[in-house]
Length: 457
Image (tube, rainbow, N blue to C red; front, top):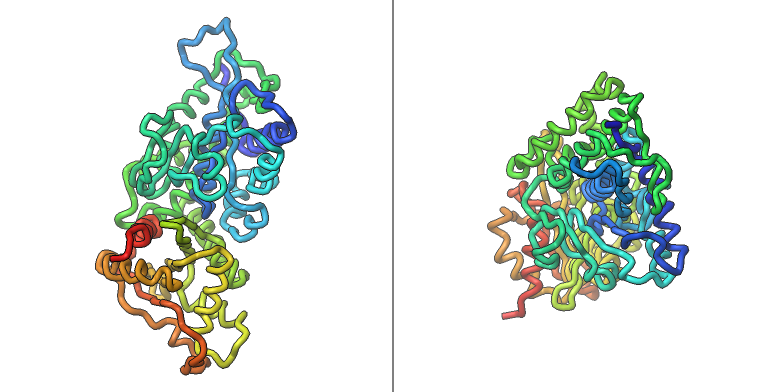
């Protein structure tokens, strides 16, 4: 049987073209609802690769081995990966560009919230879409309000919020270092079936404009190269989320199995196998992710940000790959009042960020490697008066679990006066060293949400 395959960049381009054609139409021209595959609102590397990988594999045109070769099967449904951020925010994620260089992905081939808002503005019907969630299991915000009822599947490694029905077509929610590893495990057989060959599918365009898949029977090395590109894309997020499979308490068997499977794909491509160095690849992507020196204070907080509503109150958490001192210096450099002490000026800048997003409680979680080579975490928490009780509950209940120790990184900044202006009220504000470094936002967010979700005693 000829091998059925398509390059990742070509798939993305044609998926976007098909999506835009639906956006421009008053009726759905396809045989099935459009299936949107989207990651969480932080749109980190794991969300990106999980969405692209899931949509790519599910769109490969393969048939069951027992299919009747005389009856050409219909083309597969259209799966479109949606990057859950505006297009302008791609610039905040240099690690994406590092991965794109190895995988042939072009940023213009991605569908972002900009294109999706056009789809919504055109008055598209919710029944024209179905949704698969990756790297989260509850659709949040405006998308959740409109499309939650259309969610048909989920692959995720966060705490189960019970929003996706138990009888969903795909429902995988379990602990894992990287969501991408779970996508690999879930769809590995489908990818291998596609690689094993088709049943005489035409190479002409499919009705949903995602056709022209290449029948590369005469050039196996080309298709193996395409597989290697997809494998590198998937490896990037798995290696980042597990520190190249070294993160204690995070690495699961699915992560190790996925890395072995993906590296085997690379080894099958003569061009890609030569010089492949997993450690060097990891360090390249990790260095790009940590390169936030050129970002302003607000962009540092926006780069990896998630938001929830609990009991009508807004909660936001930013993850930052530099120490709190780095974030504070950014804030102070952009500050307007040199007479304020560092903590008060920082709190004021954070307050402005919170006001933009209607937040009651806001946290900054830092994760970085010290000059001595030790992985460290810090936690900063700020709350408006309506969130004081929840913030205090969190401190009391989660302090031991997270290994929180009082921290004075901002007060210790040099060159700032020590006195606070009496007329300015300081908000509820705490900062800690987090000794339990294995606890990421995936564990801290549920603790904060539970503290906010309970009524005051």
